[in-house]
Length: 122
Image 1: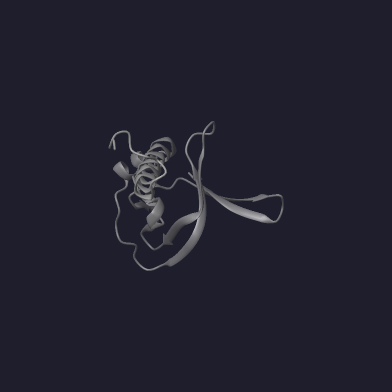
Image 2 (image 1 turned 90 degrees about the vertical axis):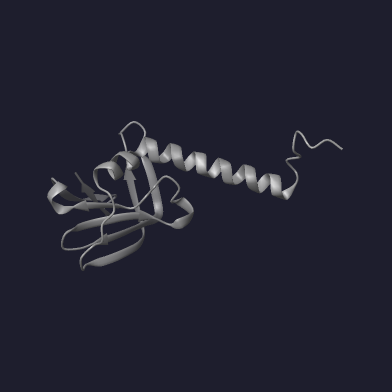
């Protein structure tokens, strides 16, 4: 019986391949969205006071290839800024960010199809 190549029908091999694929895809999304670059500028800090919004959605990155984090982000707002993090299963290459209010140029509230409101942070 040969050990190589591994049999992809074996559960352990499948789980290992799936986990590796998951981490690689999370790495690509982190790079293309700009999350890693933002983390270099705004490392994580504790939020003072404020409110926590779980299962929020956000889209970030360039216009031609935006990355959407649908219902898997946690937003904490406070007196000194806001903190973004992702759920544990999506957190590979996505360390939490803390963006102070002094770094925010504008916050616009807009509507999509009249019923859906969203905010754009610049």
